[in-house]
Image (cartoon, rainbow, N blue to C red; front, side, top):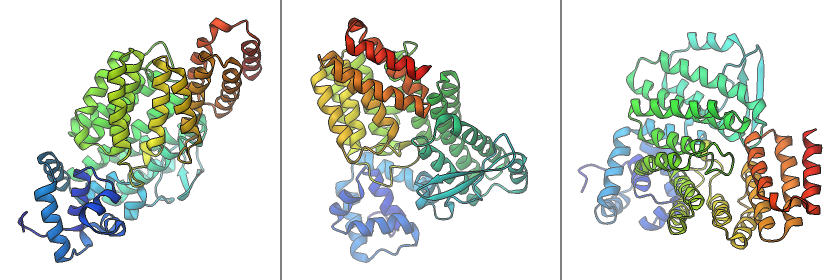
Length: 440
């Protein structure tokens, strides 16, 4: 064997991820079915690979993988199968399926059922959770159970009002923090620490939707600092992506308090960790960089960053669309294309890109769709279609208010500011009357 030992299913999967290939592309490269690669991803080291497949993997590793690919491969293998499972969606974590044993504390004393497409999770409220933490030793299984709830809460950001979600989310984060402190085994403590980082970022996103920017930044900064202490490059990169978004206030589309330069600086730190990040994270880095460059009217840099985002998004498969990146795909990047064109002053291209994204069957995130509609309304207005822009903005403002997404409302308010030059026009007057009625 070229590598000195036989390949396991886990190592085959590690090579796929190290080469940054989608399941379909990797299967085509090896000349096997996609079901074969999915079987490796599901069963990992329990799979026995045939000699012919071993030889194909030897050749791929030796002749098709670059030195950077091989370095990433060795890193993934060194981290181990348990760490790999921890990074995957709950459905590939085996025993980490969401159940009533995956619990989080909340301020009062009963159960809160949370619905998802993976079933109902009873999120425990009150002192019962702290009793559970005292009685349950930190183990691989317990970390996996809590990880499943983190995934679930991250996905619920798109469908539950943030005011209703913040209590369970913060209580779950407190429970994960207790698990981290209780862990004595170094390997389990590192996993629990990574989960605490991830859960803190989830909480940050909910605080952001509520409109509490200081709390949102605090949670992201905590995650970044802890990840660095644990030398967890994956979570360090992810924490930086979301902290950058807050520091720049989504490149000033949301608030004048943001600093684009600070946001870009943190994004560049995240980009330096790209070798350890999944495709969805790399796509978000490129998209956020593009938006910041567009604010600064740096068209060439913006287009280059969008190209990086699109290439990374093409590698996203269903296994990557989980947790914090459950709403990422090529359509999400298309929304960024439209927003960037709006910021660069090309309203016609912005309208085309945003309408394409909104009509895509892959547009499955309510929050992303509403953000796209806000920018589409701005594009219509500045292109001369004032009545259409005001109509779209009025409908979207009402939807955001109903959802309770204050950060989205701030974005809509910035869009309203853009149409100030036409404040005496009939469509604008009608819009302002509608907004006053909604806010009453």
